[in-house]
Figure 1 (tube, rainbow, N blue to C red):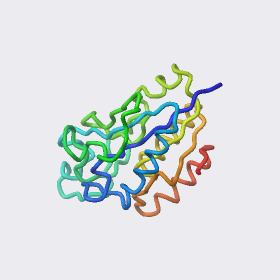
Figure 2: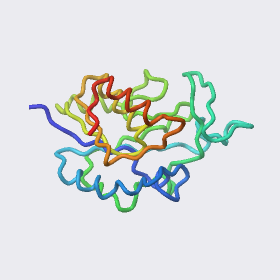
Figure 3: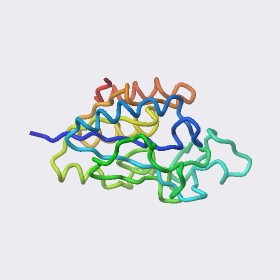
Figure 4: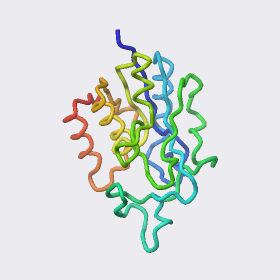
Length: 199
């Protein structure tokens, strides 16, 4: 029988109220995620982990503001406020997240020139994080995804997981969205089209 894992996406201080890229009610999911962690046979976390001056930060682009889009070598890139900088309090997991059962922490976005929404691939698309191989090697085929934000890192991870042949569920009660210009509805539709179960 295929093993199951819970993948907790980016439950970090900078994505919670008071953080540099706060998702509304982002911290409200923590108790729900903690209950799911206790019940899950395998737990994997992702952590946004940007070097200072990352290319996706609006502060790196003269005359550009956060949430504008620029063209990178790998395609369009949303610009963000500086967030989840390596070693800062903002990059740390939310203090109430009970993450001690995590078997693996996948850090993403650490390459200065490429952003990374997905737990499985950098935004250039060909560069893998190694998570897909790790899961397959361990016989884990069924994935439940939770975390921040629904319409970016959670959705991109879910779509990539489905593309790699995993059975994927997103538990929406344990996610919160940024919702930039209708991005939540658009990404929910994309996930359903790809066969991701939205609970």
